[in-house]
Amino acid sequence: MDRQSRARGEGMDRPQAMGSAAFDPAGAAAGVIDLGQIAQLRELGGEDEPELVLDLIELFLSDAHQRLAEMRLALMTQDHRTIARTAHTLKSSAGSMGAVLLSQVCKEIEELARNCAGSELNSRAESCFEAYEKTEQALKLLDE
Image (tube, rainbow, N blue to C red):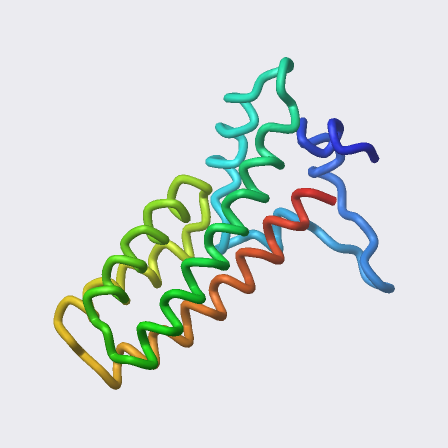
C-alpha cells in the first residue's frame, strides 16, 4: 500500500498480518490513540493533502522525543519547574494528536511537578516514557 493510501486510511479497517497472528491496528490503538482525532486530522488534509496526517505524526514523534529527553534531564536534576513546563507542552501536543494515554500521564506529571512530589513524580515519569513507546508504536502502525 502506498503512503497516500495509508494517509487516507485505506485498509485500516481490515486486520493485517503481523508475524503469524492477525493484527488489528484499531485494537492496538485502543486506550492509547483516539482514532477519531486521527480521522479529523485526515479530514484537515482532505484530498489535496492526504499525507498531512503522516507528516503531523512524524513531527509530533520527533518533538515528543525531544521533550522526553528534556524531561529526563530535568528529573535527574530535580528541576520541577522544567518538568512541569515540559509535561504541559507534551500534554497539549499529545492531546492534539489524539495520543490520549500520553496526554493523561503528562497531565499527572505536570500536577506532581507543580507540587514537588519527588518520589511519586519519578514513578509517573517512568509511566510517561512507557506511554510514549506505546503511542509511538500505535502511530507508526497508522503509517503502515
